[in-house]
Length: 260
Image (tube, rainbow, N blue to C red; front, side, top):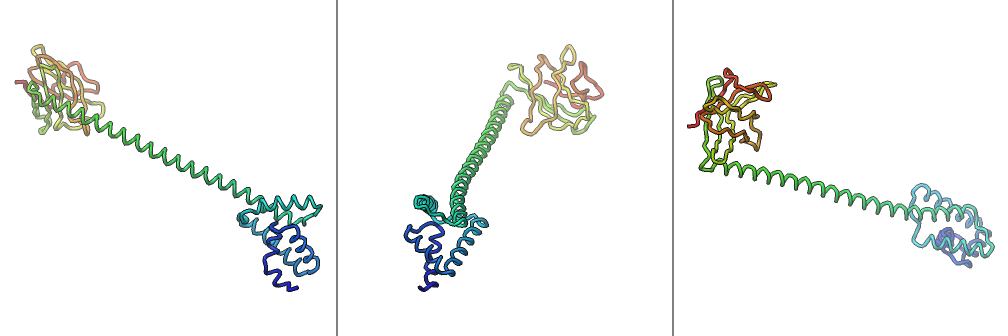
């Protein structure tokens, strides 16, 4: 018998993996008993496959699990007792197939989670974009409404010039007696100190009447709604304590303009 050729044929590897017929297995076992070189090689293959399975966790060739179960069943039926190492190797192979299946399910689960995460992220971006579009649309509608009011022939624009307290101070009141609506637009007023706030006044025959406090204009809000006061003959802006004052502080009057 050419032992080297027999070993090189791959039949010993197939034996270890349980892929031989009962007759072929009996032949391998008989040759292993007769030739120490074959027994040594068989043991080396079992050890190598065991170590490879433990170290690398690679999946055995397709069909191994069914072959393992079939071979064990056949051996039990025939009263055969496979070697302890061979049983360990076959057990590792079966375990690896189970691990591979679980790993595949885990990979699918993780891929599904990533997909759902991507969808959720896109939905969030869509919501933010929609909110941004809604905000822009609301701003555009508000600006269009303000422009319609300013361009109304019944709306008067009363420019309030500096009283000298701050030379370049200027603001404008948009006053519509027919619609009974008023807006103020600030072109130039100094930033008030903490705890202070500007207040608009209508000067009537009965004296100054508050039209409300206001802030300096913000981006996208050049005009601010103020209270309408009927019969206003002039308008003025003073700097008061935050929240406003029942009467104007005359030495803190920044701008003044006549409604004529």
